[in-house]
Image (cartoon, rainbow, N blue to C red; front, side, top):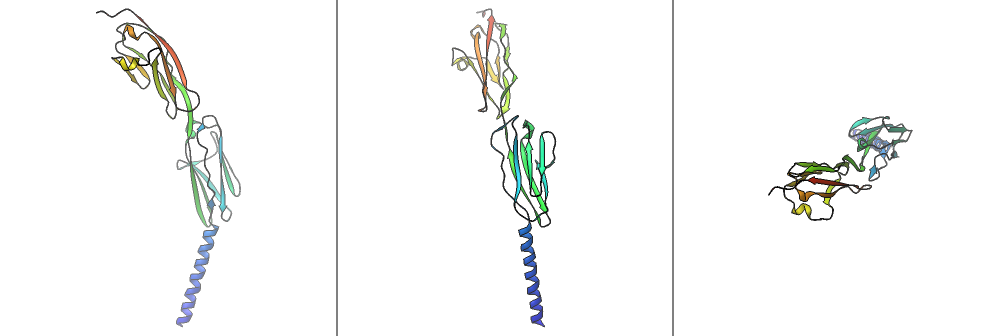
Length: 216
């Protein structure tokens, strides 16, 4: 009797193992995919979520930053029996994020994610303009730009590379050049540039014209 029970348990374990092994082999396994580096605004990009192994039928889902993603607003999802294609056209700043393909069948579920990074060359937020003022006034000249990565904004005074190192009573904050107060020696041409390594840098030359003289 004991031998019969032991044989039954052995056959049951073998059956369970075989069933479990079959389920593992039938479960979906996604082929890795990756977005290209340094994608720019107004370009387009696509990735394919396809299966290395598994048993159909499959259910495909796309997520962006853990939220359900469907076709619309520049996103096109085309799904077949064994793969799903994600196309973004055109790319915008809002396209950046973590995209996940999730595949499910009767034997299991699998997912794979890839991060889309959107770069953008600098563009003016506040472009500097010529200034005409008088000695002793508080003067600010704004020069700000946006892009990704964030642009670096720099000012120079033409003909005097060390001007800002020598000049007291001025400040540079977030691209804004501030003289408080402005003096006759601040008269001249200035150049503001913004760059982030993507596309062409922005460069703008302005003139600060100052009337009057300091009272000594």
